[in-house]
Amino acid sequence: MKVKPLMLLPPVLFAGLAALFYLGMQREDPDQLPTALAGKPAPAVEVTPLADLPVFDDATLRDGEVKLVNFWASWCAPCRVEHPNLVQLSEGEGLPIYGVNYKDKPDAAMGFLDELGDPYAAIGADASGRMGLNWGLYGVPETFVIDGEGRVIERFAGPITERALETTIRPALVRAAGGE
Image (cartoon, rainbow, N blue to C red; front, side, top):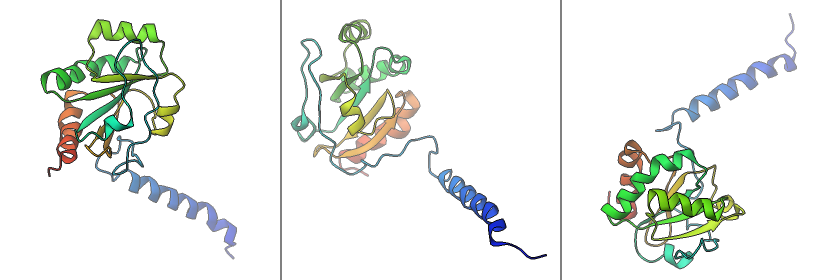
């Protein structure tokens, strides 16, 4: 029997695809979404004021302090889950957190903060989603650890739970501060 070259194409393609899947699953945390921003300067801050709350800008991200930038929305159930941890980081530990209210109604966002507390040093609205797009946002909540020079050290997609705090966020904060 003579083997035609096109007959080999499906098994070769399948083997290549299987190899890609296997290599992708060998990451330390296969559920964590990668970011192209790691180690690079944070993209531009493009927010509008939310009510009369203080707003932050690009210079804020490069002020010499380690900080978090947290994308959230009032309509986001996981944002409610992570909120007590953000309040603890901000109020209990003094970590500056800058909030980006993503594609939300201002009244709903203010109601969320009135109900659960405001952990943010400053906050801005991204009603159009432009800033989220530039930051590579997959959805909310997402949190970025930023070093004092404004570089992205870590991106965490999903709610910051106690486990995420200990395994991802705190180690990234240490790296951002020049430790490790």
